[in-house]
Amino acid sequence: MNDNLKEAFLDVGFFDKYFLICEKYPERDPLEKFDINYILNLFSEEGFNIKYFKKERFFSVFYTPEFYMNFSIKHGCCEFIFVINDSESIAYPVSKIIRSLSNVKLDTVKKPFFNSYDELFFLVSYFFELLKMLLYRLNNG
Image (tube, rainbow, N blue to C red; front, side):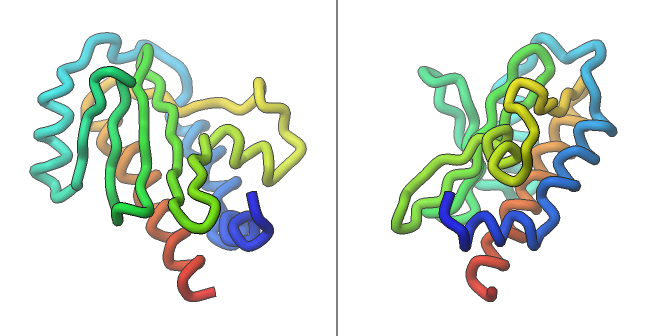
């Protein structure tokens, strides 16, 4: 991760915001089975540009074609990946972003869990807002 991007993550308070949401949504009884079409419709109806990749088993929520977020769902857990197609064109798993911002060991980085569609919607919306904040910071210093 280049210094400008690392500084942008720090400036938007990404580290603290991530741990706050993980504390609020800890591991518990997960929503094990979910309806992919329901999720696509839920997000589409709320104005999100969302797509599901069946073979890879993840969703993409697009802010722009160059700047979007992937997320996968497994056992009620969300794994988020920020994709930034700039000169480096790199995908940044959130756990690795946290690792690069601190001395936290990768295997100790918690992930947020959900047990309802409402909680899933909140988590994805929350991380999407962080993505937008990051883009704003990158474009406006």
